[in-house]
Length: 338
Ligand SMILES: [Zn+2]
Ligand SMILES: [Zn+2]
Image (cartoon, rainbow, N blue to C red; front, top):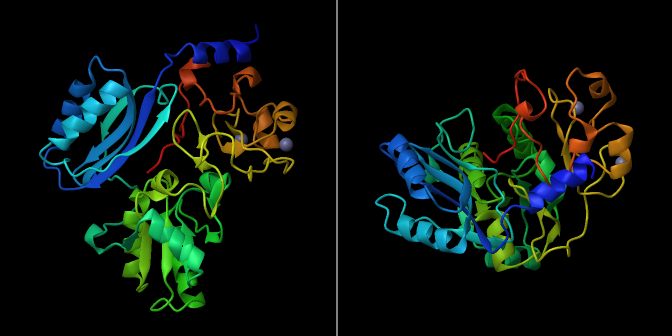
């Protein structure tokens, strides 16, 4: 059995069953976020749960996967929680655990941005049905996708623009350009992200810069998929767990819109560059993966620390550095929604 097959076999040994994937966030003042982190960790003790949860003075942002009984217990616990009780959960089911472990951490900001924003001044919400109706009616608008570029590449709403959202400065520059192109006091701007949290922040930035009619998709694309399906959506939804991409309406029905980074062939398999100091997330077909030894570009091929090609698997995040090397990498890049 080759390394790749062995890894797949190990992956399939993870317990199978009905797992609930929960996505949620809530902006609310938290006096002692460290105490809430500790309470969460204690609650998860002995339960079949994996997660990535961040708590700050401004609220909570979580993604979690749990066996049905534990998911229900968690939702009941939150419903009786003194500060998080108004949390809204977006739920999906899956056959496996999708996060590598339990991660509950303090974080200064729930959405990484170099600015202080007043969240109460965000855009107006559009429920998934209202969003769909807006598009169906063909009402005037500009639509912004405020996710990352690698998310956009495998799926997005028809007609959406993709502003640069990796840095705050780039986003602001984009907004200035947009203000020159359209009448910001008149033209409605619709914005969306994966679960809704980014829009809470980015919509404030737009309003602060004079855009009068800002609308954000309530609950993000996850909620839209749940409520409406894939109308006006092309491709798949990138998610921040072992699944990597999901279809908005059942598995395997969505059109593949991703293109191989090297040959432009139609593909939606993501890999991290085999050069561990690059680690770029890129779309790649099987042929190009072999040809470039799992690298994103030619210079990466001669890098000192290359992850073995057999370890390059789509839809299964790469192992941590210590799996391959004895020394620590300089700056590992993590993929997670912020
Ligand atoms: Zn290719
Ligand atoms: Zn690379």
